[in-house]
Image (cartoon, rainbow, N blue to C red; front, side, top):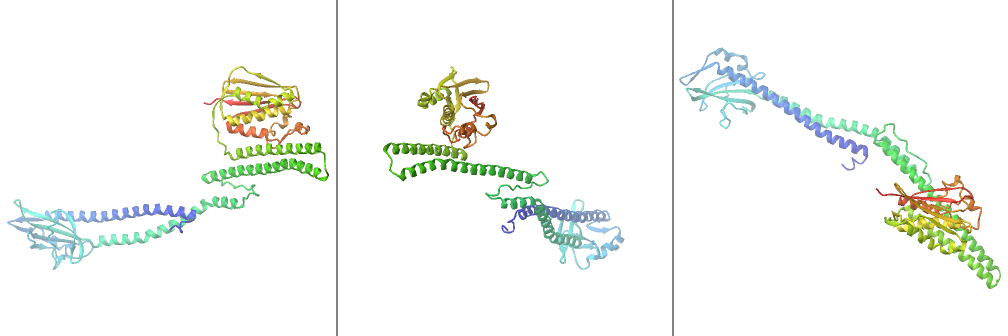
Length: 465
C-alpha cells in the first residue's frame, strides 16, 4: 500500500478513493436497506389487508369457525402458487386445522408460540421462506383458535439477493473507475509541481538565474512558485554578495601581503644598516597590523551575515558611550589637534546593545577623525524627538559626492575623494559594519555630505512601544 501510494498523484487519488469508498458503501447500504424495508412493508401491508378481509368473512358460533363466503376460497390466489400467493389457515389453540386454503395442499401452517399474537415474523414452509401472522379468534372473550395468514418471501428475497449481488459487483468497479479518474485529475492538477521539480533540478550554485513559471490559476501552487522564486532571488543575491565579498577580501588582503613580501625581498638582496632594517621591519609590522584589523572587521561582517550574534537590549546612556569613544581616540585627537564640540546638555537614554552600539560609534568616530583635516572641528548633537532620539556626528572632512551615498555602505567601497588621498589608509569596511549593525539593532542611519563640505551621519533610535 505504501509503495502504491508513493507518488503524490497516487496519494491524492488513494485518499480520495478511501473517502469515496466509505461514502459509496454508506449509500449502497442505504439503498439496500430502503429496498428491504420497502419489500417487507409491501408484504406486511398485503398480509394485514388479508387479515382484515378474512376476519370480516368469518363467524364463530359454539366454537366452530364458519366461512360466510365459501366462493372466496376458490379465488386463484388461494388455489395456486403463482406470484405472491396467499396462504390461509384456521386452527384451534392446539394447532388442529379447521380449514385452509387449497394452495397449501398437504402442508399446514405452524403456530409459533414464541412470537406474540398479531406480530409479523419470518418462518419457513417446506423449505421456502414465508412471512406469517397469527391472529387469535375469540368467542365470548375466550380464545378458541387462530387465523394464520402467510405470504411467500421468495420473490422479495430474490429481489434483495439480486440487488446485493449487483451492489457487490458494482462497488469495486465504481471505485476503480473513480480512482483512475481521480488519478488523471490529480496528475493534471499537480503538473505545475513537475515544472517546479524540473526547474529546481536546473538550478545550481553557478546557475541561479532560472525561475519557475507560475501557473495560470492563482491557487496554492501559484503561491508556492512565487515563494520559491522569491527564495531563489534571495539566494542569488546572497551568493552574489558572497562572491563579491570574497573577491574584494582577496584583493584587499593581497595588497598588504604583497607589500610585506616586497619589503622582505628588498632586505634579502644585500646587507643593510640597522636603521634600514628597523625601518623596513616597522613598515612590515604596520602592514601586519593592517591585515589583523581587516581580518577582525571581516570576521565581524561574517558573523553578521550569518546572524549568529545575539542581541542583548538594555537601557543605555548615549552620552556615556560617546564620551568613552573620545577617550579611546584621545591620542589621535591630540595628534591632529581636533576640537570636539558636544551640543547637548541633557542625559539621553536609549534601549540597545552596548557592545554593538560601541562598535557603531567607534567606527563612525574613527572615520570622522581619519578624514578630518588637522585643527578642524567634530560636532556631536543629540536631541529628543517625539518618536525617538536623534544623534548627529558632523565633521569637516573631504566629504562624499551625493552620487556615492547609496554605495558607501557596501563592503570594501571607498569614496573617490578617499581614493585620491592614498596617505589615508582604509579598507572600506567600517561603514558596511555600521550599516549591518544598525539594521540588526533597528537603528535608522542616514548621511548628508558633499565633496570638500564635510559629512554628517545621523543615527535615529526609535522609542520602543
